[in-house]
Each structure stands twice: as structure tokens, then as C-alpha cells.
Image (cartoon, rainbow, N blue to C red; front, side, top):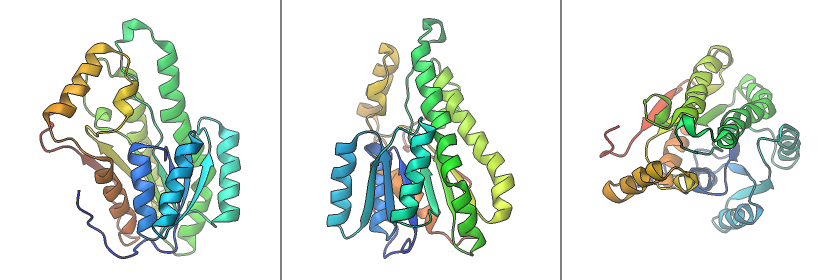
Length: 258
């Protein structure tokens, strides 16, 4: 995607991006920083976070890399304190960390079920816990406040072998609808981005051979989304006037039929 936004529409804002070490998270953190936000980078892979922070700094931005496993509630809460001390009050949260592990339910790959539930659901809830009060405070002060969550087209499509992954993403899509009933009246925007096929490392974690072939074929056969496409979408959501909330955005490659 060619950049849609120009200038520094996010100047003065403090953003948190989870899953910032690769793919959508990495691209979005870089884009938010380029548009003026100070960005806290959360993920487990410290070396990749440090490299991203260096690139952001070289581009004139400011980034704080924090090696954090978002499934660890205490670690996320500790990171929130450090971010507040070093960058200030957070007013933009992109809860993006997630994992996709596809298999038929009868395979009973329960460790993969747990991994998806822990990261895709509990990781997001830990992130909400750590930053929601800061978002409310920002909104109460008359400033923009955004909670943006990465869901998936799988949240609304019925796809064989995607049961647990799709279930976690359906949870997130519906969670954001429910959060808007509470946070919207406080002028905190809550948005969900539901991408289709994105060319990231996420399919590399899939262990089921059929699902792996399906995704590999899609990457070869159609012009899939790039992480930068989702990054621009997130940045656009956050750059709108504070009375405008783009609540649910499905982003598909033009050629993706399902």
C-alpha cells in the first residue's frame, strides 16, 4: 500500500504495540513512529525489538523496546509502569500479539489450543488491564484515546480446522463490540481490524500439513496483503478526529474469495 497519511498526525501521542517484533506489529510500530508517535515496542524477541528501535530512531522517531511476554500479567503491568515513566501516559494501544496454530479438533493438539487461548485472548486481556485506565484518562482530558485490536477474517468465516484459532479471534471481535458500550461513552475509541491473508511469519507456525499447503498456495497464487497495508489502516484509524470511530474493518486481498 502506498502511504495514505502524510505529515505528523500522531505527534504528541504515546503508543503501545504488542507483537512488535515482526509482521503487522513491526510494520505498525514503525509507521506510527514515522507519523509522530512515541512508541513502546512489546514482544519477546529482544534482539528484533532493539533492531526496530534503532531503525525508528534513525528515521527521527522515538521507541522504547521492552522484552515482554504478554501472557505474563505481572510483566505487562510492569511494562506499563516503565512506559508511563519514560514516555508518558499511553493514549494509543494496538493489541496485536497473536499466534495461529491450525489443526483438526480430533488431533487433540491441546498444547496448541492452550497457546492460542493464552496469547490471543489472555494476552489481549492483560494488555487491556494494563492500559485501559490511561486511555480513559486521556479521553477525559480531551485527547484522542484508541484501543485497536488485531482480530482476523477467521472470526466470521467458517473454515475447516480453524476451530480454536477462529474461536479466539471471534472472542476478540465481539469483545471490542462490548467494550465500546462502556468506553465509547467515555470517548475512548475501540476498533477491530480483521485482516485476510497477510504475508507474515504467522503461517510458518501452522503444523497441520493441509493447512500449511493451503496458506502457502494462497501466498503464491494471489497478491496477498503486506504488513504495511495493515499498518496504514491502523494509523488511519488513530489519525481520525476523536469523535469518529471506525469500529470494525475487514481488510482482504482483492483476490481472496473467502
